[in-house]
Amino acid sequence: QVQLVESGGGLVQAGGSLRLSCAASGRTFSRRTMGWFRQAPGKEREFVAAIWWSGGSTTYADSVKGRFTISKDNAKNTVYLQMNSLKPEDTAVYYCAVDYTSVLHTTARDYDYWGQGTQVTVSS
Image (cartoon, one colour):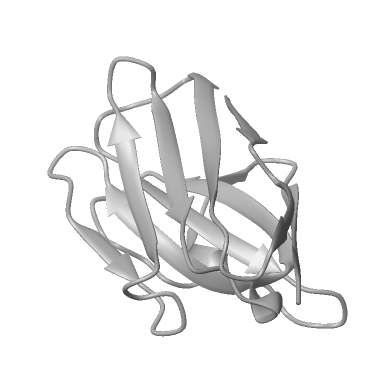
């Protein structure tokens, strides 16, 4: 079993920045991919970014490419999502998830464990 705890969400004006954190504990392995997803009210959960824990390869949704950066701290067993140039359409609950493969999956059903989510609200 693994536990994922997100933090760092909040209210920010358009154009501002936030950094989300996701701390993992419990059964964690180096062979894993960590992902960020988001879900706005009335919409399906959508992929945001993912990082391969061992190699550091990353992938992003087109909607956030160039504005968001996913990174990790191996010592702290934590993955981050730096969000810059935020837009009102980025408003959502943001979730982190872990997938115990080395594939940068972009589909929610491929991930095994999820955090509880953190709210990000961007005002115009």
